[in-house]
Image (cartoon, rainbow, N blue to C red):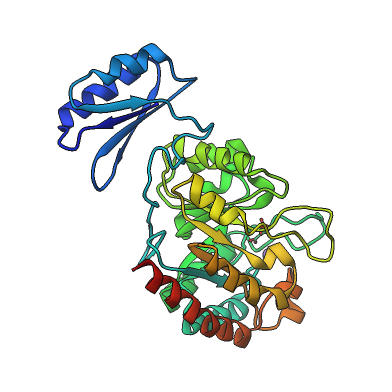
Length: 339
Ligand code: PEP
Ligand code: MN
């Protein structure tokens, strides 16, 4: 349930409500908005008598059930988009944050060349997989900690924040030492042990939509991370499995405005994994701005023909530079419309 506090509610009144909520067997989460504070009480179902009794407590404006199955990530709890700070960059503040880099970290030259080039082109974050979730066990599995070290070196060189995937609960602490944002890949969207563990860290997490996950399942997975203590979750639409085989996956662009209706979490689009085709990245990146995404993730490689993974969908350095130039008027138009 949601307990909306009056605009001048004191900390004492808020704490008292939290104690009462715990007494009823729910977990309180205090969410401080610009105008007022709301306390979200999550647990197993909302009891009418609890809602009624909290309604009349001091400092309370109103109390009502949360109707959606996902609670803390729901728009019902927080109307305003969550702005998440990643180093010098903020995602979810109305701007458009671009994450770019190779599918896999392959070595120093490859990573530094890419990092310096995408930084110059205007990317905000460097991406690169050090732990790779490969469909075949015989494919390159990533450079592991050596890859993380190279990502940190690239951050020092370029000033770009770093996003990289974590596959295993046992690696969360290590990856969090190096990365600015931890990525959960599509194959792990419902790895609940991993999601719970990521709820305990104080770095932002980007959760990619599962290959065959519904929007409800996607948001419930985000809820796992938030309810375990980490509110800084970014969602990523990266294409879903459909009957269509002409593209690697089918980009569900409708998911973006729909998620914006249902959740306050920022939403990013990954047209590289969605399509598997370099030529489709540019039009779908523009479309992502138009449908209200908070950012983009694109794979970029100095020599895609020689990439150890996902070459056919990776942009060349100059193609990424051109993409950034192409996106500028779209981003500016959106900014001027929202003013
Ligand atoms: C990735 O971004 O490196 C990746 C493996 O993507 P996905 O989990 O969306 O397939
Ligand atoms: Mn990839």
